[in-house]
Image 1 (spheres, rainbow, N blue to C red):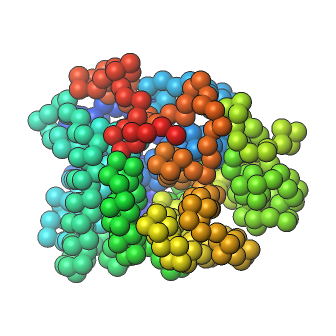
Image 2 (image 1 turned 180 degrees about the vertical axis):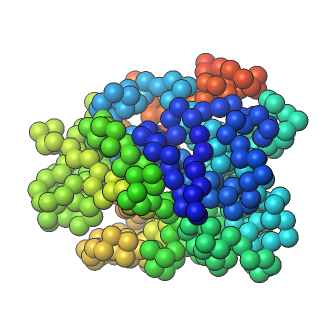
Image 3 (image 1 turned 90 degrees about the vertical axis):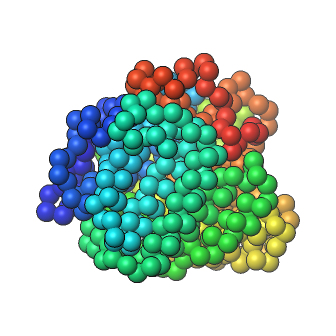
Length: 471
């Protein structure tokens, strides 16, 4: 299923459950039944963006939010996901979009069509690096080097660390293209930055910084140095202008994936998790009027206690308040909320984490305050008290506070799961539960059934190469 292109606007094709039921195996382009014969580069890019916004902000965020304890699944499939009762079909909405339905195949077609326009090509490369790198982050070894070859019906799995190296190199190539100034780019067909090369250079550097963090656990502190260098060239300034964000509207065909989820009658299926709400509330189930002003924007409206349920693990950390009804999302479920894909806030917290890990407390504190300034501008709130908290800590306590505030701040972003796997912060389970928080996602069932290179479920690893150590 592809997004329709009508007079330059994006139509989401009224997907009630984003991307569910739209799967196909990774096939050569000519076998894609949804392909648009003779599509222009602009048409392919517009369709890709529609695909990206639903893929990065829908089912993927629900799973990562449950796994990182921002969210709690209590109804229907989400109740099973809360207890890690999952199967291959659950992950197909995250598996196929990076390849077909506006993914790698169409991005490569578009690049061929804009040959010579280096600015346009650079923007397309950044999008490819984001989708493929995040797919490797979630699934581990994935098809990439053979995935768009029409002569190969069953592409091999590339090692996850090899994929990271490839997309980091692709981002360097993208930055070089964007710096060249050669070509006119996509213009208004770019729904984020209107083809502005400078803003895409910053976005590319932020993505680079994110991927270097993904490799810290396996490669060591040298990756922090690389993450720092990239993040310092990344997204900064006014978030409303510079964040790489999803683009939605109040038109039901262009709505936020969470709005569509709620519109399908699923609001009660997912609730607040006490791990998140307790940290928003300063560590206790307190009245929100005395605590973080972002809380009611994230989890509900009005005043009072919005403490989340203690769900999932019986030893879920945090005081919680089982007697208080958990709230569902507030502003993030609005039809026209443009949730960040990668932001000024995340980039500044990458700098803060790297500086702290490298022993530079003063620089880490300054960067953490910058991250909260980005949040103030994004949400329209005053976080002065939270900024002051950083002045009272150093060393390991500072590192922990940085990860806690990043966990709260990058709300509804799959990086919360990645951060927890790398640092085991901002929470640790007091004793290991019988079923550990999953370290990776299962390959899609249709892909396994049609690609002999995909191992069966029992043979798939529990963790990815970049995350060898469980928390």
